[in-house]
Length: 132
Image: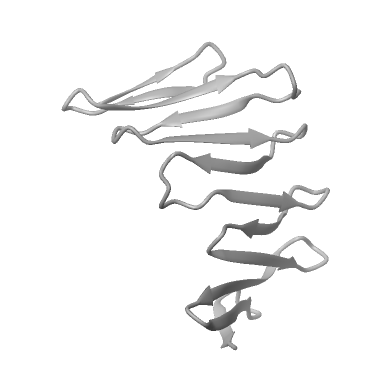
């Protein structure tokens, strides 16, 4: 096994003993100011991720039709506010110091709509949760 890096010290390849590999390529695109990350898995699947002008990942598109695409949003401090796929959405809530307080997940399960929430107690343990 081994790793390969480009001149900017970004990981570009992970080599497996059976001569298979995972590869990462950072592609500059003329219509954006940030690169696109293209990932190729050793199973032949690919993933392309876009980044905003701050370098924060905003969405990932998977070649595998069973893997839903993902979108992300952030606040001005870089804290993740939402994660969304076709299967579920997550909303993150922070306190004034920027520490994660709550993570809520919403998804459709058959004909039922499920919303559950995890929240931190004073010892920073995920103690309280609810399911609706």
